[in-house]
Image (cartoon, rainbow, N blue to C red; front, side):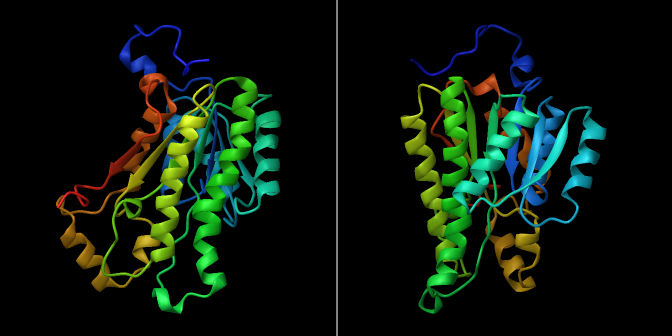
Length: 267
């Protein structure tokens, strides 16, 4: 079976970006980049399940987006590091929220630890990998089983520019390696799942999220000076790219890693 092709390739280009009637789920969707992804998918017409781990206001956030967009948005607590837990959540979303269907899954949950390599122990090394790599794998596996049964689905993975370069001056080898692994996982799945799903990545550069703003001011200033665009990305500037990958507007696109970084990786 070939890669899915929309039934009408000649429909108006703007209508190809519509997600009306789609069922989507976003891990790490209650804050940061994930929150903007949820907003973008909802604004494009999708009903969105917000998957979170520890947020205290995820339900309220989901209700607010639903009220603003006129679609269904609902929060689900889960743990992407547990294969059985995230699978149960994805299945629950499919059956209860999607009424037996799931069209788009965004594996967005991520963490970052700054630690010199010689100071890692088993636990600190495993922490980033459990979320950024294992978490993507278990989310993808749960979604993939549903996509295969349906014969159609779409997985989008949030990676990072750290997947293609080594950030300086901070030391974050576990984060860098886990994001690089996630990108290669996506490419491998794109080939393996050609008959029933598309798989793509987005690799943001420096984004104004809690992960960035909690860093020392001197690091922030140094990063800013390294970005040709001379500013840090607002999370809302990323949501349109996720809508693009989730939509039929890029129906022949799979296995790609879209870098959005203000030119940071170019010099």
